[in-house]
Amino acid sequence: MDPLDRLIVALDYPSRAEAMAFVDRLDGTVRWLKVGLELYLAEGRPMVEALRERGFEVFLDLKLHDIPNTVAGAVRSAGACGAALLTLHAAGGPAMLAAAAEAASKLASPPRLLAVTVLTSMDAAQLRAIGIEAEAREHVVRLGEMAVAAGVNGLVCSPEEIIPLRSSSAQDARLVVPGIRPAGAVKDDQSRIATAGDAIRYGADMLVVGRPITRASDPAAAAAALIEEVRAAQTA
Ligand SMILES: O=c1ccn([C@@H]2O[C@H](COP(=O)(O)O)[C@@H](O)[C@H]2O)c(=O)[nH]1
Image (cartoon, rainbow, N blue to C red; front, side, top):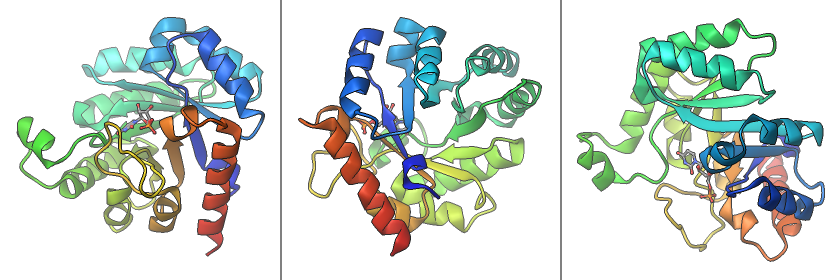
């Protein structure tokens, strides 16, 4: 797989002007950009369309989570803007996921649906606080198997769950992995992390990287270095 198709840069910015100023600084080094809630709620569908017009592939990370009928409608609305990937929460359950998959299947060019398993910011204490006593790995595999059976195309998980998922019934799902940090870097609000090279060696398909690139003094160089790390890991 082309390493350029394995890195998604998260555009966590409050406005189109700031996002586009950052995109300019990337200087053509990346192919995939992620529009999340902050930017989408501020700028909406035209933001995605503008990135598509500039030739980028877009991952629309809206993490939909509602009753099946509402999520199906959201997939129809969001899916028409040209994004290649769209997220929803696996915790919405099989009926919600199946309704989303059915709605996507009726679109002219549907986004691939990715189910977010357990947010990479959550550790054991956070999981216990919402009533989950199982380890993150165990819970991710349970959610991942359920989500794939319900019809989604891929999963969002942390680097720590890639290997367990690859030996589960969800083994063929596209695994999109945030929680990427260079060795020794600050975790910020992330908990379950690994380096880009390790995540690729474990079996990730695509990596999502925000602050290690957006906060770099030279974002284009930081992105190019990550792409090189991916290339080295996949040929090792
Ligand atoms: O479990 C999840 C799901 C989504 N994300 C998103 O990925 C990026 C990560 O940004 P960093 O700055 O590299 O931490 C961010 O946009 C999240 O919304 C996630 O981190 N974990």
